[in-house]
Structures are given as structure tokens and as C-alpha cells.
Length: 223
Image (cartoon, rainbow, N blue to C red; front, top):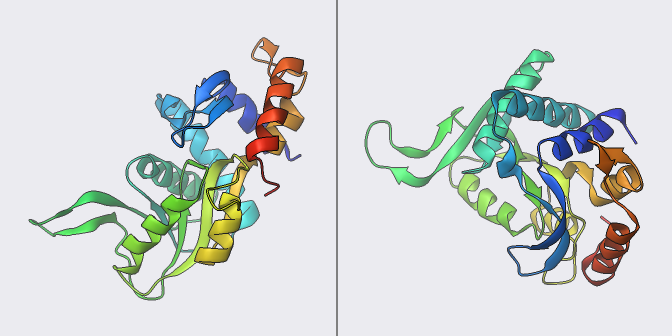
């Protein structure tokens, strides 16, 4: 596993973004672990998060000239990632959408880089579970200009089946024809965290590992 992936898992734990216990997802599933990206709360943390996104993008994507962050969580993600990429010598545009179209001033629903025909967009999101939010994002963007899409980058791929039995990444690849990638996936988290001390305690002990395995038997996917 790449070193930056290991560092990212440690970073999520230190920020209390990645936790283990008893949780319920938005879809109603009872899960033994939870990823809450709303826990990033300082300038130092969001700057570091951008560096991890930038590293993953450089390793996985080449042809893009604009980052798009869907409102609301994608807004700071696209912003900090654009800054981190610029610091690595990759200067690209970034933009995000309003939830409601502005009917005064310059109007419109997109803030930041002015999207135009031929732009190649990379979507920046937090976590993907079912993949359905990507369809909503593409609908917004396709109404703005004739765009190409380099792909989707998220922080964590939970590697779960959606309602139709496919994983989120399979749905995104097959239905929307874009490439999804994550900084880390659940396999990475389990491989790195099992019986390993992180931030002063074992991240995934025997009990947590069994509960994750049982959960994945019911909901898990390979990609």
C-alpha cells in the first residue's frame, strides 16, 4: 500500500473522521464503522486533506482542467484540492454549484471557473456509498456546457453494493461512463488498521474485524 494511503488513514483517525462502533447510514444500514467528513474543522486539517486529494489525483488522473465540487461538502474539497495541486505545479480551475440558481447580479448556478464547451471536469466528493449523487451532479453540469468528464475522486470508497446489487464504483463506471477513484477504500483501511495501534489504540481489533467481515458478507462489493 502506498505510504500516502497509510498516512491518510492515520489522518482520518486523528481528526475523528474514521470511527468504529455502532452506526446507521443514510440508507438505513447498520454499520460497524463510520466516516464523517464533517469532522474536519481547522485550517490545518482542510489544507492537509487537500494534499491527500492532490496526491491521489496525480496518481490516477491526467486529462482534466477543472475541478468541480458539488454543494455543499464538495465546495471546500474542490477549493483545497485546487490549492494543493497548484502547490505541486498543477494549476487548474475549480468551481462549485449553488443549491438555488441566483436570479440577480451575474446570475447562474456555478461559482468559480466559467465552464465552457470542451472543458474536462474532475468531480471531487467526500465518500461514495451508492453512487447516485454522481447522476445528480452530471445533470447539473451537462446543462452548463458541452463538457467531458475525467472522473470522480472521493476520499473513501466503502466498497458496498447499491440497491441494484452493483457497487457504487461499478454503477458510476457503467451507467455514467466516468472513472471513479478513491484515496483509500475499505480494503486499505482493514489491511492497515487490523491489530495496528493508531493514535494510542488498536484501530481494528478482533471484534471489530469480525463485525466488518459480517457487514461485508451482507453489503460488501469488491470494487
